[in-house]
Image (cartoon, rainbow, N blue to C red; front, top):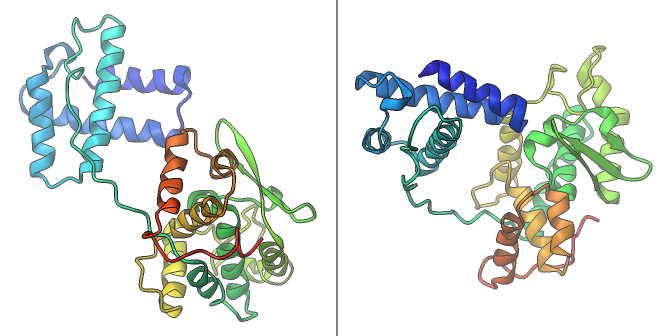
Amino acid sequence: MVADINHFIIYLREIKKTSKNTEVSYQRDLIQMASFLGQQGIMEVDKVTKTSLNSYILFLEKEGRATTTISRCLASMKAFFHYECREGLIPKDPAELLKAPKVEKKAPTILTVDEVNCLLSQPCGDSPKELRDRAMLELLYATGIRVSELIHLESRDVNLSVGYITCRDEHKERMIPFGKVAKLALSAYMERGRQALLKGQESDWLFTNCSGKPMSRQGFWKIIKFYGDKAGIQSDITPHTLRHSFAAHLLRNGADIHAVQAMLGHSDMATTQMYMNYAQKETVRRTYAGAHPRS
């Protein structure tokens, strides 16, 4: 079965042109499935049945796996067996009628404008680290980019004179504007902070840690958690909080949903619509003030 999985991964890479992260995720999920089935004596793809796949899903539930994890594993299984059936390698798709567990969507944490202003004002010193932290927080809120995109920005991706950044992945790129406050914070960091953090080293990355190495997601999570606590914000802040707040604040104050979708990089309008739904509910948070307070 492992050989069949490897052929499927090659198909994803060469024909479907999926991202490396998607490829790794599918392969991990399917290898774990194959390992479980192998322990049940099922070694070949054409011996897999709906019952054996249901047994695997029940096993994942008993192991205490998150509903989102099980849903992802099921999606991997469905894609794999659909491919096998379409290629004529198995007579029937055993995963076709499998049902995903119901996922309860947790409402994203959306800060008020006052809370955002308080958070972003915390790194107020002039040390290289504080200049970097201020630039990262301001840019994240000004553009709504993902944390993974933030930490993978290169210096060449910033156009300070016009005021936009370029975010790239394996298949596309998008340009996102930012306002004067983020521009000032970025300028200060690039002029007085970045070289001090690099300590004479060369790096393409825009943001680095205090050793001049690439910033990690965990490193940024610690930064935003530190300043959230310092600001006295009671909400459970995560690295995505400023992205959520960026979208909700703009939509609440009349921004075009298609423009926000483009800035966020959502391929599916339904994902952006989620922010619109939260923004339209008076009970989500207190009233927002200003379309985007740091434009």
